[in-house]
Length: 427
Image (cartoon, rainbow, N blue to C red; front, side):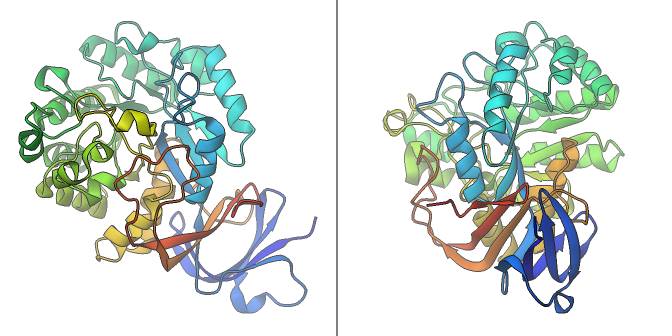
């Protein structure tokens, strides 16, 4: 097989800190050559001209819901993987709140096998507790050996402290992260909408900020005690961001957090404007929270951007605000929102954005991804940072997002996974 060359692109590799104009040679599923652009001459096979484009490690999303098994009318592993490829993602980690939930070897094996039959790297977490009931731990050692990359009951908080402590102790021994959905139900009446201006608009109780930062604080303290790598998922409040910052500044680098594009872009005003398409758990908060999340991304407190891609059917989202499910799709808009809201506005450099969307998530989840080097995996995204993206034609089965019709900067031109062009799709 001849080498496929990507020519004249501006390469960014956050792992090494190297960036500049390079040509990248790919053979089979590996990068075999990285040379300065002027050095690559002569006959080229399978050439991609990346003039004016950024070439970076394929994006990594450690928080997606592909709804299989049990809810494939919303999404399935194939359509979710296509949405990921279109968005520039080459590796995604599925959540385990399916039906049946991924709390046993058989279900894990089934979803991993289906993941292998996609064009990208689709891997999976498993639950922390059996049936996500918060009462009894899964067979963590057995499931880790069977291919689980982490543990989470995402979608449901784990309320029993002794269960969380034991789970952290076991995850620590296994060297796998354990990720937490931090919303204490004792504070919440009608979830998905912030308690404040948005809940007042709808005349409902809503979800207050205390629901997040109280549980986050508990689990950060347990992480300090156990040494386990934890991920505070889809962080939404300034208080929780500060708790993570204080832990990391005190030397507890096993405490991690992720932020979604919708939480760094929108506030509760969007829940009023867009209705159920801006309803999610945890909810959109206030401007001070949005800015705190951006500052957390800027100073490294928040190491990961994750989409929490959560597809639902139009019929479900058309229900009244208290009955419609929470969540929005995010894979096809994440990169453009990062460029538009964080890079274009001067909060992050492009290299820092790539770190948060690729290298950082791969590092926390111990994945062989998120870097560009000779001998490394040929997983890349090539995008036009100034190209306009107007979301509307989705590869996902779902369209539940407030970002349809927005004018964004940052358009994916190619996604390459395992040395193969997986986006644009073959016609």
